[in-house]
Length: 413
Image (cartoon, rainbow, N blue to C red):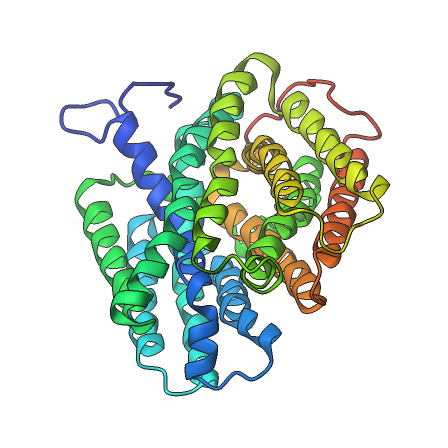
């Protein structure tokens, strides 16, 4: 059943309304964002406390979480198709909470890395299930529009999380960050348990085995093509997140101003999500996302023409990143919607395969770029350019060399 703006997601008295649905989906998808971004101002303090000697290894607190997050999606997506959406969600949040406690008490870096991987594994459940629920209820351009509304709420997390993380770390030290994440997980579980209706068509999905579902994902040109493309673009976002603390604190010496600059750059994605919600219904997912990808490459080309400066003025670097992420805000929701559009019968499993690939690929690219940090922004800027080019190639292959054609949306299977 398709619903558009303002209407109840499910017809019936007392059911969750559109605004609450968008907010709940945003929090479910945003759990990983807050779990990552709240740590950024405290990475140095955590590294010192756990005796992480190599500065680049502090990034592993983020990287291990992301790899666990990628793996968890392969598990929770198929479970949500067979058990329904709510039971795997409860299981995932329970794992997240237990791992969070282990990270809070971690005596060594090794224990911290393992706990963070387990925490990411559990956090995969709300992310992959949120995307499946949205696909249960919406298709085509309406799905892309709902994803844009979700992104508007979701993007508030990286704006506020570093500020929150810095304040908590200063007041009650870095272990208090995990206490906040535990409270968030418990509140999310209560909210979803009380207000979220079951949306899975388990009878239909149960007839599709895991291998058959994987084959359906891998052989659907639109799905696999846009998943691969988004994997490259997601690497842009994750590489910036993993390197941002070193760039802004060590290179530009921002100190306590780092969360404010990080928040300012992240805020452009709120504007992008709002613009996308307006444009996608009128022009379609392909036109909006393809032109945004070309604009992103134009931004990267400007930095290339400037000679890949090692330390451009802070204002110039911030403008470059902000322009890149405005384009990303027009690309991400549409690439996700295009990948999921043909997968209505197996929304949970398809979401898990797509999420696993995009997260694992993005985390791998981010690790490569992050470990290349050499005291300059050059590795990050070159990484942005290479990943954007790779994303364009993937789209061209998927669309058989055509861009922004606005061809008909694939019908759900």
